[in-house]
Amino acid sequence: MRAFQDFYPEHLAHCYGCGSLNEHGYRIKTFWDDEESVTHFTPALFHTAVPGIVYGGLLASLIDCHSTGTAAAAMYRDEGREMDSLPPFRFVTGSLEVTYLKPTSLGPQLEIRGRVQEIMGRKVVVASTVQVDDVVTVRGLVVAFQMPEDFGA
Amino acid sequence: MRAFQDFYPEHLAHCYGCGSLNEHGYRIKTFWDDEESVTHFTPALFHTAVPGIVYGGLLASLIDCHSTGTAAAAMYRDEGREMDSLPPFRFVTGSLEVTYLKPTSLGPQLEIRGRVQEIMGRKVVVASTVQVDDVVTVRGLVVAFQMPEDFGA
Image (cartoon, rainbow over all chains, first blue to last red; front, side, top):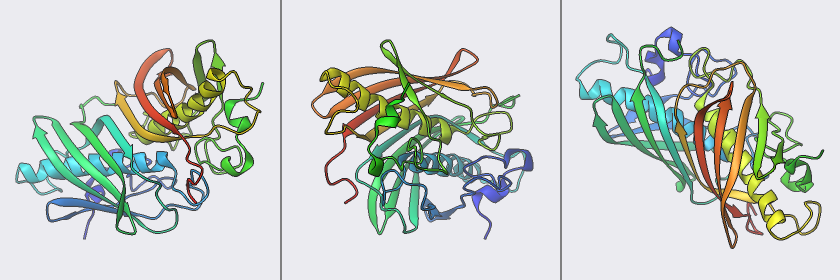
């Protein structure tokens, strides 16, 4: 099964978090699970805050890319379009809120789950959680916007 | 001059963002500039969102560690203590808000500036900006808490 990120056009597939062409990056893969989107990711041992705990910046990064990917997938779904249809949807982050509820153990695979809260014009709001060993340790909220045509130009 | 992070005790100096002992990490260095704290950081070329633009997760990560470092330094200052006095202050992030105002050009050195908004008990609130070429591209707000004694235990 192809992940959301596998549909990104080549020139937009270099993101450190989710670009399949960034060999230094996280290359996350996100899928639908009914109404939720799901990403699994296992941090490296050096992605640490204090020993044994996952680095908060990585958690923020995972929420960020998980959410922009979910925003794009949600927009395709909302418009009844396949993800390989043109023109492609890609989203950028307008704002990112992360609440660290408790330390996230470093070692096990993490599960990031997202739920679309709102689609309004070019804006999509995605609420997410990070779980480790079935315990929610982090909550995220991302306001994503459809990427302007001239983004980065 | 020693940076805030150079005063972290050895067992707390492994953070991917700011630990001097994490050879894979960013190893940011933060200093006072009057009432503001300042971190300079030059991203690698692979820290990209779309080509030419800095990855948002990196920007969130830099704001995060810049702010927890600032929180610790502010607490020492508030108590009239030197940063090498004991017991050491270290902070963890309770919440992180990042607003992406415009794309951040990839290539030049970034400047992260922080200002302490509030110190209340074990909580410190730090507002930050990221600038590139003297233009503010990102705003951050971190609520940091003094690290519990058993954090990660």
